[in-house]
Image 1: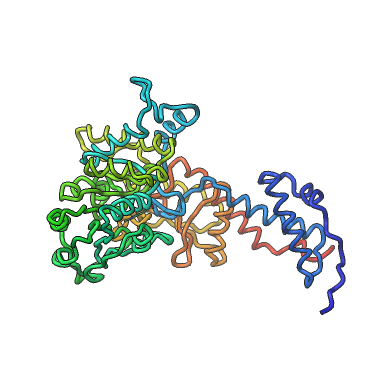
Image 2 (image 1 turned 90 degrees about the vertical axis):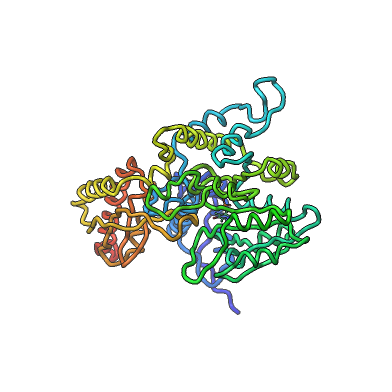
Length: 477
Ligand SMILES: *Cc1c(COP(=O)(O)O)cnc(C)c1O
């Protein structure tokens, strides 16, 4: 096979980097990318080496993609409150102030300020969480999955018993690649599936619990729901079966609602830790960054004897949280405790995800109209529409929250292109496409970001106008 003649020499890394300045990413990363591009051009013998300017433009595009992959704030116009891809629960000022004050310098993370000896990490937060969960004790690990792994790992190698009794209806997948059966098996447990997908009776539990049973596990169906010919016994019944057999009963609650905020927002209620423990569960676990509205964390609450044993397991050390997580969680826990002490017994204030859930439809409509008016001149056809927002993160799958969105009809009928332009804005605006239109749901947009949203939409209208205009530079003069 003949190699075509190479028309041009490849430019040097230095020359390319100079042409790309100012760089959007640190120089070593840009240099690496440039080197890779040169190597790729050298390898590809089929295509001629591009001209210098084309080469620069190509690398510039890739650098932009690299810069876009840096962690950065976005405006969430999806209407999904705990959007896993968008960082789940936003933390808010109280949590951030707490993180800043604790993490900027040194802290008493593991020091008792009373006697100057070694203190317990997270002791204050654990005590507060135990109170909020109406439990004897509580502890915190890195995330909900870690909480479940720790519990399974500890209990399923306990007393030589390995079987975990679980209903077939609860062998679910949570988010990307987190499957309950795989987690179970990777922790050394043996699955003892009972019942059928839609029906599991208390007799199924009774028959399955034997001398081989390590624990009975229930998993809240957080990201879907079943309706119709379904049966599943109450927690108290399952707890009684487990207790009679001397086997621990564990409930993975998923969302981590600590107050009945779902009900205040007109949503289907999520299970709360207190009542599940009162029904007889020995341990419950849930995430910190879903409905609780805190940082990524996995919270375990229940009997003190079990919590102490989990904390003594060597795996606990590998799953423990950082001081920043404790600092943020502490602010959230305090907010919940203050709210519990208030007479009105309403949800805590200044927990952003709860605040967003409780904004009235009228307020959202007022903001939407104001934004619509500001964009009157832009040429973007914008309508204010009622829509349905969602909790997301696998929470409250059966109910949605009434909300208000801006519905933008793309001038060329290309809603995805419009969405792409908005994503390309800095800060990026993330919307969704439905019925051929681009929707920005204001339920998840903080009021202080309305101005940025207006600017992003104005800039997008401008860019779309330009890209529609006939290209003048196509023909040489
Ligand atoms: C979300 C969820 C998990 C995983 O929690 P992470 O904090 O995402 O690790 C586990 N179980 C259930 C039921 C969940 O909803």
